[in-house]
Every structure is written in structure tokens, then in C-alpha cells.
Image 1: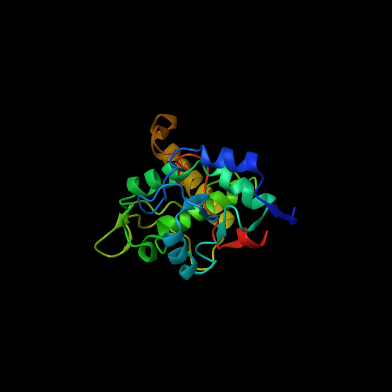
Image 2: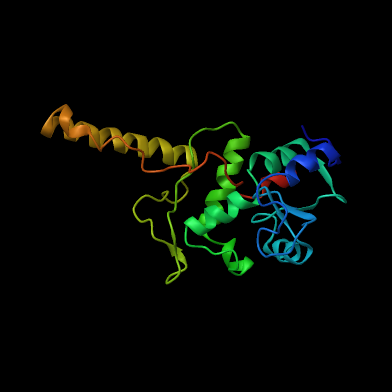
Length: 206
């Protein structure tokens, strides 16, 4: 659905009731009045300006009360799980809440969160490639060898990883028999909660 509307009061109440949504996801300002739809998170006025400067491909910003919303954007805000989920996700990946916004949302971890939410909204169950923890020494990711090939889509990546896992299981079968399969079948990517983040800012246009 593409028709736009003011955020209904009952929807706003549900969104504000989500864990952590009483405080900006990037600082300690209370009662945030803006949102980054790309992450399904609420931000304060000051931080919303920094989000806007990132560009809509990284963070699509809406005013909770002044801007119009479409159904997909409202669904993103509700299905994201709230600010605390985003803060906890970043912290688990080695990214603290007080990291510079321009740095934080240019990480592979932020891209993973955006893409995961987009895939959730699209009804896709397979997660995007998981970048692992943030490496402060390089500004990159500790995960190596499990990243997409150049130009590879998420679906293509997941298909390739599934094929590689099956090939690994078959090699173990040939070498050890079925008892050698105990640890070979676990997926190399986990979604850590099943919600996610839109990969390219497309939430703003849908």
C-alpha cells in the first residue's frame, strides 16, 4: 500500500510502548519525536539531523507527528522491536550507543540490521549475510570468508552458502559416515531475533 497518512494515535502509542522507545536510540534525550524508518527506531531532533545528513540510503527519517506515513513504514516501526533491540544489537557487535552517528550507520553491522528489517517486511525468512562484530582497529568486520561475492544478492548468497554447507556435509559423510555430521549442518549466518534493517533506504519510497 502506497497511500500516506498521519501516524494514527493508536499506532503511535504502540510504537512508543516498545522497549527503549522513551529515549533516543543514539543519545539519552527522552521522548524522541523523530524516527529512522530504516531501523524502526525513534531519535531526538538533534540526532535526526545527523541521520538526515547520512542520506536516505542509510537512514530514512520521518517526524512522528508532522510527516505522513505509509503502511509499510508504520509496520517497520512496529516490527523492529524498539530502540532497545537496536541498541542491544549494536552493543553485542561491539558498537556502543555513543559512537558517532556517521560512523555507526556506515558500518556493515548497520547495513545488516537495515537489510534484515527489509527482508522481514518482504516476508523473507532467510537472514542476510551476518558481518559479525565490528572491528574498531580497521573499522570493518571480524567476520571473514563468509561475505557476499561482488554483485551477489542476498538470495544468491544464501543459496551459495546452503550449497557449500551441503557439499561440506557430503565430504564428511564420505570420510566419516553419518557420525561425522554433528557440527557440519549449522548455518553460518544467524538472524539473532528475526527482525532486520532495510538495505538501501527503500522503505521511504514504499
